[in-house]
Length: 217
Image (cartoon, rainbow, N blue to C red; front, side, top):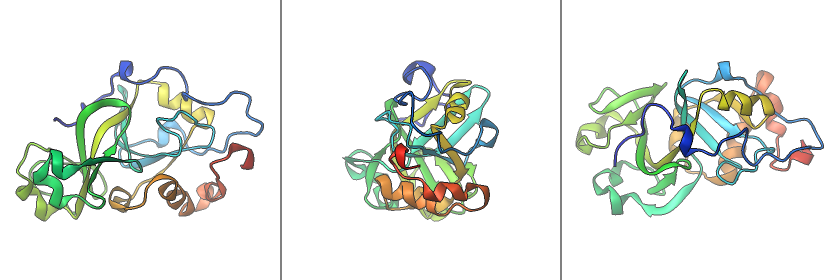
């Protein structure tokens, strides 16, 4: 299995704006962020209006963002596939629960690995502060001293040019700063969603009041 391609394939992700968004919402969307805020290392947090089952309640770590599109991985959806069963050499470096995470609906047979730590070793490509994309073809022993832990994802989330900007404008996502700890955090599902929103401050403090139910925002 190889690392994710540098740009998304628009044919691999459902077309249209904010797939699953319910039209005619009773309240204005709770959102913050614009396309200019998106960069590798930031987080896209699904807002309540985004009901597409691929992304509802997700926290997405952005791996790549350019004029050709955006690539990220969902942080808070572990699968039932053990890393030790597929990539046994990497299992000792993986943080609990030691499972593949469902990175998104694109290229589900592709493995992508993110690590947090000082870096500097072979096979580590910096993504954000303290976060690195890992080349799974290198010897895990050459990486172990340069990372604090890692996660392996099956598939990824991809947006074609203009798609993510439209979804941000509609209130489907909030764009917030990411931390290396987000890559290693052991929480999942809505616990991770609430944790990321609860730490926001300044103009983003409005997000601390967000709930999964759009009628409550």
